[in-house]
Structures are given as C-alpha cells and as structure tokens.
Length: 204
Image (cartoon, rainbow, N blue to C red; front, side, top):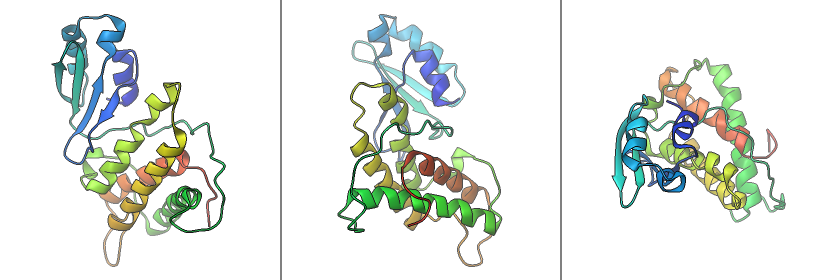
C-alpha cells in the first residue's frame, strides 16, 4: 500500500497523527466531506495491504493504523523556496538549517555509493525513532500540496530539523567496521527523499 493508494480510496490525502515513534497513524474526515457511510469507507480502507486497523470515531472520522510507517518515496518537489538569507550559517538561521539539511542528504547519497550500501527500501528497517519522525513530517506533504495554505516555511524547517537528528543519531551509512545492510539502504532512501524535498545546494 502506498499513500497514494490510501488517498485514492479516501478521495483525498489523509492527515498523519501523532509522532509515529510507536505506530504510524493517519486520520481522515473524508466520509464526512464526501457524505459517505463511515463504516463502508472504513471497510474499503481495511482491504488495503499494509493497513493494520481502522477505527470510526465520532460522527465519521477514521483513524487508520498502518503496519509500517510508509510514505511516498517519489515526492513532488515543494513548489516554494523561502527567501531566507544564506548567512549567518548558524542554527539560529532557518535558511542555513534547511539548506544544510539538503546538503547532508546529498552527501549521504554520495557516501552510500562509495561504501557499497545496497539499493532497496524495507520500511520495517526504520525502527529508530529519529527516522520515524522524518517519515512523520514527510507524510504531511500530500495534504500540504493539496491545501490552500500549505505553510511551507514551517514544514521545511521541521523536516530539516528532524532529518538533522536522524543524520546524527542514526547514521544512514556504515560506521567503523559495520557492514552495509538493509537498514542502511532504507535510511539512504529516506535521505534521497529528503534531499529532493528540501531546497539548497548539494554542498555547503
């Protein structure tokens, strides 16, 4: 199941909920907006692979729990680049934070090729809370692209900060004598997505 398939059944992108550190959850008011029986729509969502549970809440809100934290790995570039200054290059400057996040993600792709990290993506390998936070922020992208007030500046900054944490605390490439494996492949794929979403130069 992809987020696009889930949105196709719902008729609109669902909204991610929570931190995704323990479970990947979306919520949707599609049944209310489309004036459909919530139970019927929930049953259709349950048929999708990768959906662990669907709960109908209130007057028609759906709470959808995924088996793994899946996001769209072929994201559309954010159609906006904030006019943040390049300097000072400190953590107090959101322009630096975002551009450095892009540069770090690009560096990971280069290092992965040099160190022989295999290609592929298995979402179950992303069990660390840092990459799950990155996926949680990325999961907002379809809804923001479809919304009237996407709030790109705050989104890009939150994604960059989450990615910096993941980059530093759960490295995407092998460290020391560590052999490259599926967990590195999954983290490198996340870096690839982040690099496409965050604007900036490939090197700083």
